[in-house]
Image (cartoon, rainbow, N blue to C red; front, side, top):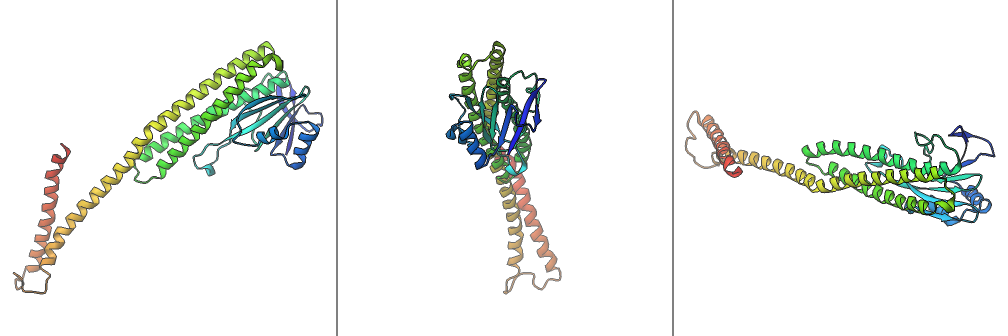
Length: 308
């Protein structure tokens, strides 16, 4: 699917003109891929890298254009079941045109970063900058999910919530790798600024992008370390809750077995004491109740001793 845009008063606006300066290919089909490779001379391997979620960020110089692959956060939905994924995006900067290739349809030019655009190279830098805001927004969501799951783990005896925390921890590892990969791309852009033709304002903005990306990495690292450090404690909480339940069930079982033993002793098909007594039934029930009460008293007396 092809979307066309142009720059108007510092903003990216959608249009339907063939002379659009910004072309966005969303999961291009075979005919669109042939056009990109044969007509625009985009390297086929680089084009496939833009659609590969496992590809690392990189910068390549081609004879008539600049190729950039950077990592971005994919949109999250409930069907992902606590797994936040990353994807790749390809930016191909020509003199009069910029081509963006993405695997799925996402809003690329929304938010505060996409204001006061003066050139196509500005648009390229803002796309990389906008990915940082995506990561930061998802990190806040992950933190909220973690807090909600923590309260459930504290009272749960199942592994379901704990497995969800493991999934969030894995997502943070993916984000750390992606943000670090983007950091290397930003360094390459800075080192090749003169070759690309960045202005002084763009160089200063690129420094800001590097700082924001570093802060994003530190925040993701902190969340990852906290989540990994407390994972064992949360697993112990689940095991402890299960042990408490088993202990309670054992006490109930013992409390039932002793009265049952008393009743069973008077239920044998042999001659037993009080079998002719008019109140033998109530006497046996009383003995069973007293035996159960005795078990409870002994357990309560022994409980403080075990806790010391």
